[in-house]
Length: 297
Image (tube, rainbow, N blue to C red):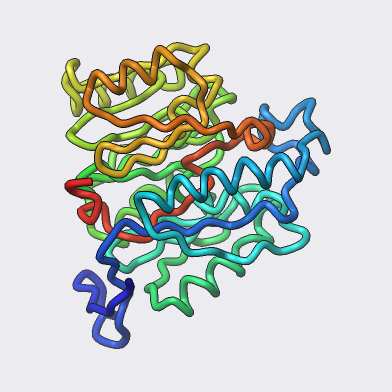
């Protein structure tokens, strides 16, 4: 259910109500036009027009159904000419009724921007625009801590470091910049995942030494769950985490067992068609509700 409240952190908040959700809520976009039509990340190389749309739709539907077990899910209509629109989490990051909108680095994805902007505006979110000259790619490269009080943003492949303070200012929140150095991990969401209860799932090889030092300073060793390169290249860090529940497209039995040892209930979902495009579970669902809503699940 959506009710309305006033956002407290922006002067515009006294002009319009913003959405408030009483249970975890996500936005998904069906893969009606999904394909690999161009190459803008290493995963797309060798996969031009190789995804099966029928298989992709079946895999997406399974993720949608599994997510609906533990959350509400809204739908954004897919549009022709935007084959990557299914990766809706790359298009914004949302918290406390404010949506910081992406400014995609590649023209091929810029066609997605007006459709999500319109949906968010019509739903009542306050919009925080990013200048066109400042590349920023939503939850692909910006991720809140599990408590929603600290923002981690990556740069080096897609998102521009100059965007970090601008995006964090939408919520007046502290921000830590991380430098990605492996082009396979072009987005933060495929190598870094803060989890409930202070845990972190991450691939150390995606970061430079200075960034690893920041991560290790923020998360004690007993809370860090590193993945191997073999696990990372199965998109092991691209997870949807709601309380103790984790949805993942990675078929890694050992990792699922390790996460279970830390108290998580892991559901593995086949998402191989989307891996051809460079995304997995996390990028297929944009969080709309505040992180605190997930507590106790």
